Every structure is written in C-alpha cells, then in structure tokens.
Length: 132
Image 1 (cartoon, rainbow, N blue to C red):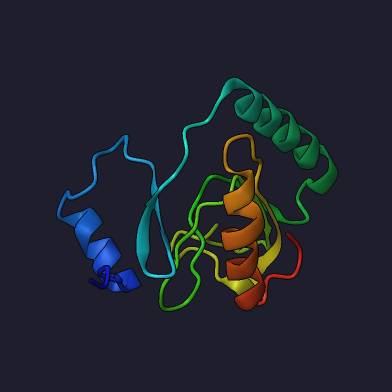
Image 2: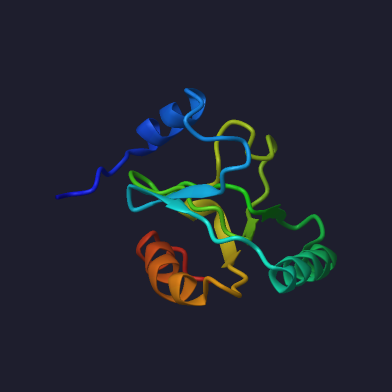
C-alpha cells in the first residue's frame, strides 16, 4: 500500500480546515506529513543560546528565523530550528522563504540526529541549500 503524498497546496488546505491542532508539531517533508520530535531541555537551551549569539553576529545584515516554515517547491515545508535568510522589506509576510532566500539552515538535534543528518540534509541539498 502506498502512503498518500500531499502537495503544498493540500497541506495548507488541511491546516486551513483545522485538520491540525494548534499544538501539533508537524512539517511537510517530501509530500509526507511528519510529526516533529519533542524538544528536550538540552535542545531548547542550545537553540536559545545559539539564536542569541547569531543575533549578535548577524545584526541587520540578514533575517533570523526560529522554527518557522520555509518552502521546498512541490513537496516540502520544513521548519528548521534556525534559518538565516536574506532580508526582505515585507519580512516574508507574503510568502515563506524559498531555497534561493536561504543563507544558512541549522537543525539542533538531541533526539532527531539521524533524521536531521539523513533525511533533512538530503532534502536541503537537493533544494540547493548548501549551508546546513
């Protein structure tokens, strides 16, 4: 039996219809709706400290996004722990960043190391995101 693969449009329509609860932690990877691993304290602390240091280094030269969607055309909308993206005047209000906007993606892993090193690394590389 083949699992149902969703397009970005279908994934967004499910969200609009209330299919996901507000506290559901999911992302679209290669057309599959994947539940994101729970964050432990080490993950949260590392993410917070890293974001703080990156903010000092990056300043106004780029936009820092934390656990926000980015669009991988056709079949993906991952939510990396941190992404550094090109600045835009609308702060990505009209659409999420696409690979061409992404300068760096960071995944902080405690429970998800294997998934991040295999699945997400391949997804980002195939999309042309070279800094991961």
